[in-house]
Length: 179
Image (cartoon, rainbow, N blue to C red):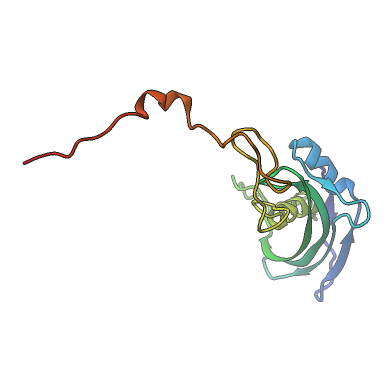
C-alpha cells in the first residue's frame, strides 16, 4: 500500500492544514487490492485536512472530494461516483516504550511523531465510496437468464427457468394433513 508518513511533532497548538491531490495516493491501493475503480482524470479525488494536537493525541478533521468511475452494482455499466465526504477522528499518541497489539495511524520514532497519511486517506476513500454504486436508482440490472442489460430493453429469453438442480421438485404437490 502507498506509504506516506507525515511528521506531526512540531505542529502548533492551533493546528496545521494539509492538502493532498496526487492521484497515485489512491491508484496504488486500487491496483493492489484489484478494485474495479478508476479515477476521473478531470476530477480525481483530493483530500484536505487539519491536524490539531490534543493533550494525549491528535484531532484530524477534513474532507475527501472528487469523482471515481466504477461499475454499477446492478448492470455493470460504468457509473461516476461523486465523493464529497467529511471526516473527523481522534488518534491517541503511543506512549514511549508501551507495547500494543492495536494498529495505529500514529507512530513514534524516537522523538518524532508521525501520522500515516497514506493509510488514513485510503481508509477515508473506502468509507466515502458507496457500498452498492448504482448508475441510477431505477437501474433494472441484468437479466439473470441471458445477461442482457434490461436498461436498454427487454430480453426474449423468457427469464430464468430457476435452478436446474431443483427441476425434479417442480411437479411436487403437498397434500393437506387430516386429523
